[in-house]
Length: 174
Image (cartoon, rainbow, N blue to C red; front, top):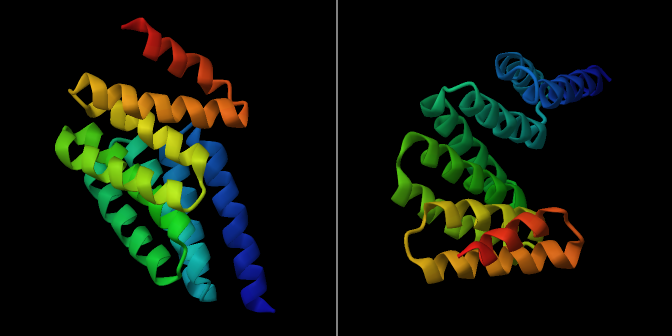
């Protein structure tokens, strides 16, 4: 029963972190660290991987990109070992975003491209479209950019996402 309480406490901390993501990245980092520790103590491997993933995203938002990359790499490894290909691909996409923030454009583009392919394969089209938009921001080849944006637009239109308007505007601006 004790581990159930730990898992619940870890979940509460994760949700607090998700709230703080939008308001205070440093507080989000603290909440995710607490969630990570509680999940580890409870032996909850997936919860630990999720907390580490969100921790990495929050660390990058707080400007600590090197630590974020380490957290994301460890989270991706954990998701792969758990057979969670979708979350592994989401983690790779966020790794690409962090790499882009550090100026490592080629590495970022490679990570986002692979993540988009993996997300498509995992039927996680919303996350695929986001990865494609971010990839388009890193590319120099106009046709490759249009290709990414056309696929993202198709996904957004199919799902009725309001992002479709912005992507369509980017495609027609040229």
